Image (cartoon, rainbow, N blue to C red; front, side):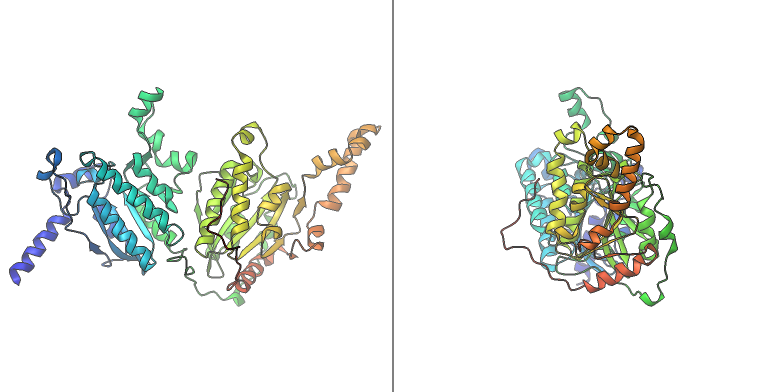
Length: 514
C-alpha cells in the first residue's frame, strides 16, 4: 500500500504544478495569481475538495498526443466560503493558456450539475485563451454545453463570474448569462473580437484595455458589475457579495442579530434633503444612514450612476436597494439606468431578497437619442421587473416622484407592499413649473404681468400639489413619516412581510420586453 500511496502523492503533486514552474513564473510576472492560489485566497482555509484532478484531454491531432497535463487546464471542486458550500472552477492559464477543450468543458459541466442538485452557488474564475483550436468543433460544443447549464441554473442558484485574465470570443457568453461579473483592472479583458480583428474589419485602432478592460465594461458597457485594482481585492469582494445572498432560490439570505430596542432616532436624515427642490444631494447619504453599520455593497457602481443598486442589511436582514441618485442627471431614469436596475430587481426577486426602493425621480430622460434607442422598451423592463416581483417590496419617496417614473419606481399600484414618503415628497404628473405653464397658460399670457402671474400660480400649485398628502389621502401612500424615524419604520415593515406570500398567474414563463 505504501508504494501506491507514494504514487498517488506524486501524481497529485505533479497535477498541482499545472503547466510547470516556468509557466507559473510567467503567470506571476504578469501580475496574476495561479489558478490554485486564487482558490486558496477565495475559500475558507482547508475547505477545498477537488474533483477531476487526473482528467486529461482525448485529442491526438496537431501534436496534442505529446502534451497531456493532468486536469486539462481547469481546476474544479467544492469548498466553503463564509462557512457555506460553493461549487467553483478555476481556469489554469499555465496549461494550454487555459483554453477550453472537450474534457475541460466536461469538468465544468459536472460541477454545475452537482451544484444545482445540491443547491449551492457556482463561481467561475476565468483566465482562458478561448476555445482550444486544435480540437475544433469539440471545444465549441463544450462552450455550448456550459451555456446551456448557465441558462438552466439561472434563478436556481447564484452564479458569479470572476474575470482574471483574457475572456474572448464565445467564452464571454457564459459570464454574460451569470448573475454577477467581477473584473480586475489591467489584467482582465472581455471582448467578442479582439483589437486585431476590430482593426481589420472596422479600421479602428484600439488597445486591449480600451476595448474590453475592467473600466470599459464597468463604466461604458455595463457588462461588469464590479471592477477592482488587483486580484486579491477582487476575490475578497466576491466573498463579501456571497454574505448578502442565499444559497439557492428556496432559501433566504443569512440574518444577523439586531436589537431594535437599541435603535435611536437619526436626526442626520432630517438635514439631507435641501430646502431648494432643484438642488442635488447624494442619495448614498440616505442609504448609509439607514444601513446597519453604514455598510452598503454597491452593484454596478460606475455604470448608469443616476440610479444606485446594491445590498445592505436592515435590522440584521439582507435587502436589495434601488435608489434614484439626484446627484447625477437629477436622478432621471434613462435607458441604462432602467436596464441596470431591472436586472438587479429580478436577481433579488429570484433569490428571495426583499427590496427597498428610495425614490427621487423627475421622470424619464427626454430627447431623440433616448427615444430612438428605445427608452419606451427599456423603461418597460424596470416596470415589468417591479410588477412581477413577489418578494417584500417597500418604497420610500424622499422628494420628487413625477410622471410615469412615479408608477415605475415600485408604486402602490404595481404591488408595492408598504409605500412611505417624507414630508419633503412631491408626487405629481410633472414638476410644478411645467404643470403651471400648461394648466394656466391662457391666464398667464393674458395677464398684464405674466412673470408675476406665473410666480403667483406657481406658489398656489406648490402649496396644493407639491406635497405627499393628496397621495396619502387616496391610500397610495401608507404613511408620511419623519426622516429621523425612518429606519425603525422600515425594519418593522420588512419584519411584518417576512413570510409574505404573493403569486403570479400560472404560465410557462413571462415575456419581458427585451
